[in-house]
Length: 175
Image (cartoon, rainbow, N blue to C red; front, side, top):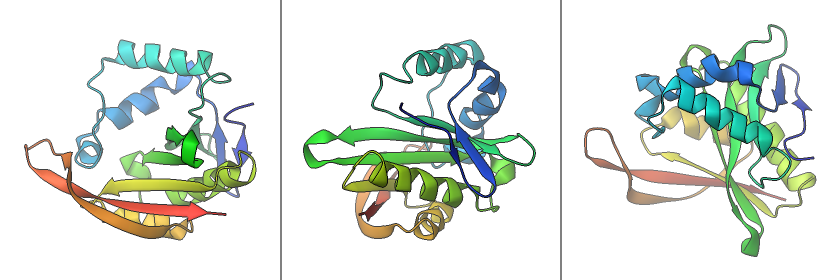
């Protein structure tokens, strides 16, 4: 089964449900987050259709996806997904977003550590990588706390909302 339920001390990582729409839509429409990540410009109805498709494809897609839920309250703190799979070289790329109100609580690092361990130990990937906009220094700390090491930097890879470009920093974690 893809995207199995994963529990950590404080979090439950689980598959999407249609009732997650409001929290997920808040993420993709939050300007404070979109300065670091390009989100699709979707209506709430289009986002619901996308979530329904993820639910329907959950056991067939190679792109595993989890909602990050706070165990104690049941609130949705964010999401974490496998974005890319490079089968030929046996690695994948993981991305995560945390709702702005939940920044600074360590939820992203806790989720990333759990998901990367699942992907390395249960899915058999040789390597899990992450990358982020060079301006998103908080994300560097998340990856480092989760046991990832910096691999490199590529300049001018991300188009910003203001038409400028910024670089991307790459991190990875292997067996």
